[in-house]
Image (cartoon, rainbow, N blue to C red; front, side, top):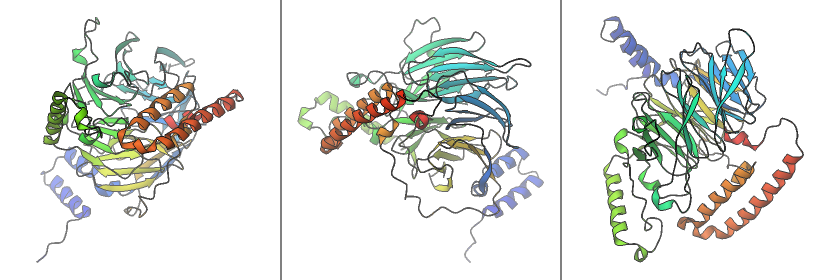
Length: 493
């Protein structure tokens, strides 16, 4: 007799019975219920939080989960009671450009908020018992500061990274910023781009001594803060480990926009115009990865030194011998600097936004896509998970924040048109400053000189001409705008 497949309802009934007879602890029962695929498939729009007047680039819950903080292109920071949808507090961040990240420091009675922004500033807002709120400039980056990371459980320590490649360490007890290092390219490429502009930073929740950074090349770099000598007597710029999928090693056309650590110390890496990958700790390439061989990049084998080729081949063999990272596909990450995150009480799911305005949810184990939700009229950039329950907050180009809870009466099914993703806007749409112009010139040069794109030089020449004309037109337009308007930096949320 063929057995009937067990449904999620059957599993829930068994879990309830096991809890009642003492075979399952209350804590494990709550974790199993919270990780239920049935709840993920019943996620539905609960509320829209609308007070910002620009793209919402950051959303984050406090440690208790009752307050949500957001930051926007309007340079304001808002604290929300997300359950009621009411604004608790709104204030000007002190930044002169788009706010990219805002987080509430834990164990501060939700009164200390740290921010970083497109102006490169890192600021602290202290909410007083009485009187007027003021923000304090703690440090600067030379260029945009995309992300900050708070040491888990610490009311004092956090890190920032920026497009200048600099990683800074902050201690709010002294309000002193320590410049740890500037992220450098691996040795063989320093003649092309010595400093790696950084987009993402994250700290391992199980071992807060470890943090990872990533940006405009293919590697996620892992560092151990215990190796830093606070008197500045050592060079801390050498990573403890590197992570990269084997097929992307040596690919100079990719970069990384988002990082996240799971509760199991797994590292999630989101690549621009590529896929998302999950690395366990033992998948690292070591502190001195060998760059990809020119053979693998399309060069003539006769032009390659024997020793270098043997070393590169051995590195490739070593990488292949290790288990391949889990991959998550279906979304599109091209237009903006998107984050990536885990979802569930024990990081059972992976979540990401997409250029098509949707939210994608995969099973962490196996990479199966189980949910796609419409999250923005343009692009979803941020997805933040509630620290204690199955609630999501999302934001993007729209001027609101969307709260998602498992309240739908019926399970959702995957749409049939997942692959029918609208074509991304051309990359020139992102130009809004001289820094953008230079960055896109470097990016275009790298793409045109890639062996895999050798037939695209004529297209590249047209793109270069259009790039110059676009920047010139944008410069003329911006000179006519004196008001507090939203710039193309919207797309870097």
